Length: 135
Length: 65
Image (cartoon, rainbow over all chains, first blue to last red; front, side, top):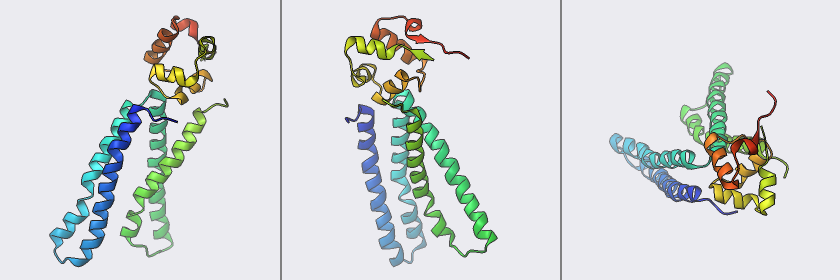
């Protein structure tokens, strides 16, 4: 299977931005415990948002420029994933409150993005399967 | 909506990948159109009609409401 130009461009934009994101997360993990400066901690915490802006740009551009069925599949998958993740975490919050679980908010927040990506992947497989016919 | 895309493609001996490349869409999109899983937009329907040298209404047949 060969990638179309629009998807090659997406990978060219997405992969370096994610590498930069991971590098800045590692930087955060390495330096935040070793510094007392609140300013530096804030900078290190917010720095990974910069490559995320590039990731958002890459995602928007691929959705805009791919063909109409691919766009429909992605948008349906995003709708399913964002509502599932949003309401899922809200329900999880209600559950932890109801049963009085002591879970740190940072431990919960850190799982939002992986859950969103994972649910998008699953939703995309499901939506694409619905449009696929027996050949 | 039904269509004659598969027949027209077969007459020319093209694969779905050939049609996809000519229309600048994915093979998955061509397959979904052929099997009626997806109805193309008007601009894409015009591109398909132009590719096969037919009128849109001779390729795409409205289904029953």
